[in-house]
Image 1 (cartoon, rainbow, N blue to C red):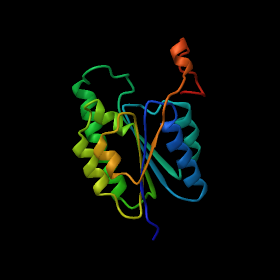
Image 2 (cartoon, one colour):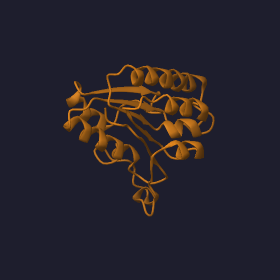
Image 3 (cartoon, rainbow, N blue to C red):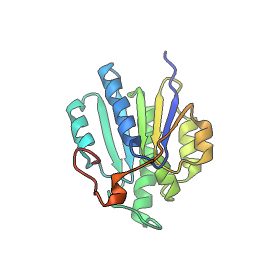
Image 4 (tube, rainbow, N blue to C red):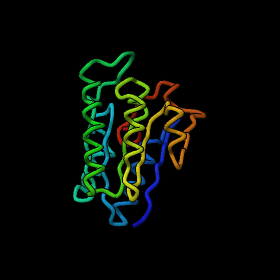
Length: 172
């Protein structure tokens, strides 16, 4: 049985979800099964559309409405995320997946959608053979401490600051 580790992609720079999806593609290419749960999103990006080609090797679920959350999230968003972390836990414990990706789970914590304690409990219950990948800016220090690999994406320069909106096929 191979050992699975905990990977965390955080920081203010672009590329956290892209890195996790690249890892998912690599795993699929090696014959592994992947579960991808997206928090605070609604699976509407081009990369998710591309992954549907591999639906026999990857299961994708959205745990958010897809609306951009500014300030305090509404009760519906909190319920979607809270139900989502429980559902993702069931998926992880099912034994069907080699890799579990919790996309934007760190953001879900910083927005108050799920608690840091809920996410840390999830991490602690990870089966030994499962690789767990968590993405999102503002990762809490205790999650950074719990991870085996932490990559911080640092924004140096971004064309968004010049007024360029997210582009289909590039940022979404």
